[in-house]
Length: 291
Image (cartoon, rainbow, N blue to C red; front, side, top):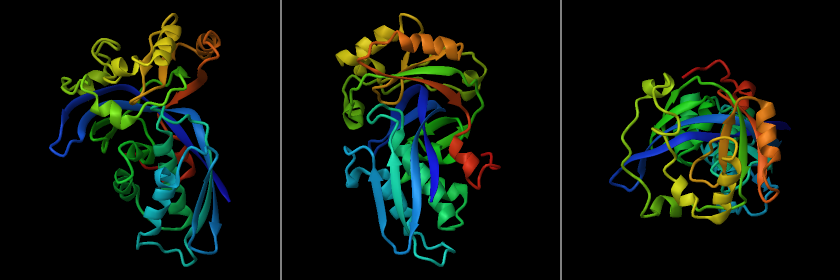
């Protein structure tokens, strides 16, 4: 039995710079992890069954990315493991669903990394990243395990090292549908591309030249708008992913705790630390790999 973390992420900004012929949107974003984590416990079985139990009963079997990740890895023909490749996966959810914090994608990535070791598959990190693309746009960065500049449809990653502030993260307890958000006719799809160099050198005015294109759409939801108003009394806030969670960088843990204390009990509020390196990587055989 092994227990592994699956961290949440924040999109420090999120632009859409175009759209492919197949309908997929071309993105630009900078993503950093936070220390809010789900916990996944893996218990090898003596048969080939994969059983995934999630503490959140709202996740169906067909939508369970952990299950899909385990099945995808189980079907690989490269395993050295001579035993039966089966597993019981217990998922303890702490990252809220539908928040734009990447909980499901992170769970899938942790499953790939953990089972690659437990089943002795011997796959390289690049191999797991290629598999991750098949599970969802956010899964590869969680496999990579390092804060990254993200382009393409989420698969083009360049590792970056940036400040690791304390954040206050607010979930308005509203679930926004990702497909509906991307399909919204008011969504901005023609942002001017940003150079990674300018972003890293601080040449972009943080809340003027970068944005989250989903924010104006998300703020149509009264609870999301109230959450923004609550936080922005103290610090500027930004949406993460396609919502509905928002976050604000603070100068200290004390400031983040103070802002959090002033939030209404209507919301779920977290004080978290920004992380450039995912805690999953420190447990994996790839803790020495820098891509």
